[in-house]
Amino acid sequence: MKFTSTIDFHPKSLSTLRGYSMSKFKADFISGIVVGIVALPLAIAFGIASGVSPTIGLITAIIGGFMVSAFGGNSVQIGGPTGAFIVIVYNIIAQFGLTGLAIATLMAGLILVMMGLFRLGTVIKFIPYPIVVGFTAGIALTIFSTQMNDFFGLGLKNVPSEFLPKWGVYFSNFINADWYTLLVGIASLLIIILTPKISKKLPGALISIIIITAVTTIISHYVPYLTVETIGARFGDMPTDLPMPHGFEINMTTINMLLPSAFTIAVLGAIESLLSATVADGVTGSRTNSNTELIGQGLANIVVPLFGGIPVTGAIARTMTNITNGGRTPVAGVIHAVVLLLIFLFLMPLINLVPMTCLAAVLIVVAYNMSGWRTVVGIFKAPKSDVSVLLVTFFLTVIFDLTIAIEIGLLLAMVLFLRRVMENSQIRVYSEQLDVAEGTDLSSHEVLTVEKGVSVYEIDGPFFFGIATKFDEMMRSTLHDKPVVRIIRMRKVPFIDSTAIHNLEILIKSSHDEGIEIVLSGVNPNVHASLEHANIHKLLGEEYICDHITKAVAIANKIAKGAKA
Image (tube, rainbow, N blue to C red):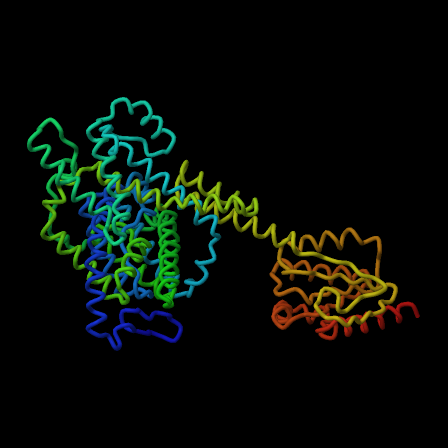
């Protein structure tokens, strides 16, 4: 499906169906069933942890999962609610309610679609790794924190959403823990941990829920005073009919208020989806169309809130489950959505019996897997700037919120990157003699004689605002050594920005006022085009913009000799 030559939208559901066979369908069918079963407890747990009902979690997995598979750019990507969104969704609901969340999610979907249309699929992959690790670890710790109330059976109402006050309340109430609930939670945790040791194909979370639900239901029947809080006890009887789509009122005030949250959802969704797709590509050997994937994720997040759902993104664990069970086309993702739909329509009464502490155990394991503590330890061996970005992002995520963490983390990463570029960019000054081959791999050396009165300044690196300021300061510091000609050697300048062009323009004008000529050397075609666009070639003279240092030195020497005469 290709709308115009400039829109990169080619859903894998269309391309992979060419030559589709019965053998592929069998593999996709089996994988889809397995993934649907694995996704069930996660969808329920993520929905509850995000501050909505289990029904909303399932609806999100059904509709979002179908949309991602139908319109995405990866053959095996499984979409749905994920742990990464728990914190941001919970905070949005706390501040703006469910309607605010729906509007923010829809806006995030539109942002994702625009990212895909403007071909930003590859750019989003360049977000620094320490930021991704930092906010992922922060989210993991926050998810872990939110589960203590249910895991220990504290029965607390209106627990503070902030990290430090939350733990203050926990520590003052741990003495009131319900030991039976805690025992059930620990048993659930052990089953989840030990199940993969028996068989890696068995979904530990689902096995735990089935066993623990059956055991606690039987015990409560014969020993009435031994009970734990269940999904049904907290949320009541849940509907088994898919909700009808509904709209909501949007105005500029609402947009301005929710835009930061929508931007966070969009960026987080893009990062997680493309990260999941990249991991899948490494295993299957396929190639994700990043722009199509962003558009597909965007469409899912536009549609899901119309049915009351929460944000959708690609889920690494479910995607890997799909791959390991033989799924190779989007048909597996569609079948996973159908399996969840059938469970939603016919098995919801059984879901009401699931203990809340069992779901807390599921999310504690999810938080542990998300934390990536081994990766965090590895980054501590990296440069200090990377460690700083990781720690700042981590603590901002935990103590404040994900929106602030991503914004400040990105800002800090850019500042540190610019600093690193500036440290590695140099400005050299030459006079009297100049080795043409210096700084290259050439074995032969050509030494040029530079006439007295000619100064050569070489810029090594991008000529952007940081280096422009550094270069301007160097020029000012050498004003007492008034030359006749200044050669600015730019052979190692890959690009030039507007600040550097502006500073260069001022330098040319002030030098001409003092009777000093400026000659540019080694100007590559890209930089030359930028200078022409800014009319520098008219100010300087086209003959004074040279492609090689030998030409520039010859011109400068001629001017210097003429000045002496």
